[in-house]
Length: 218
Image (cartoon, rainbow, N blue to C red):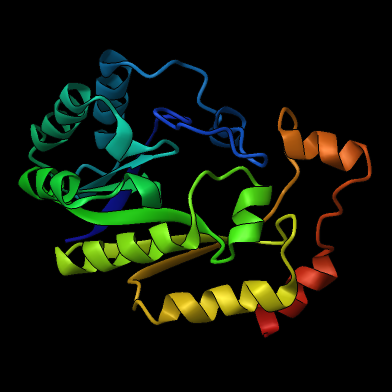
């Protein structure tokens, strides 16, 4: 039986900070506001594609574990109400992970948690207005593994205050936590972000394609 991920985007929903590089509505292309009816409709539409496949539903683009607990439960119950949805994955922030939240996710068939870590250097996190520290990431990864979830880590190369050496060291640190999934994103300058203003003022220079390819080879 084939298996695929059905992504449902909740752009920047429940995010307590406005990271300088982030504009999830532009990135995801999702124009509608987050609502139960919109999400239900999109799940039903997504399930019409390849009806013989089992599905893992993924709530992406927001800070899932910081959503109001009642609405969070409604979204999880909604996913579990469809027979073809065999598991759920979420994306969230490291500082919004604790044992109480993880116990709740266990009850609702969440299998995978992807953490937006970005960097393991506090000066880089501060420069990006992330609002959490590298220690938050370490704590969250340890708890997620302890509870038996699949752990995903999301990092970005070329952030303000970062260097190729810091990016490589971030990857080395994260391998020590044995993540099951790793996403490495290049830092892109997206219209409508503070990073775009920094770029326009000459305060930030993104990595070139050549520098990205060098980092990949390393």
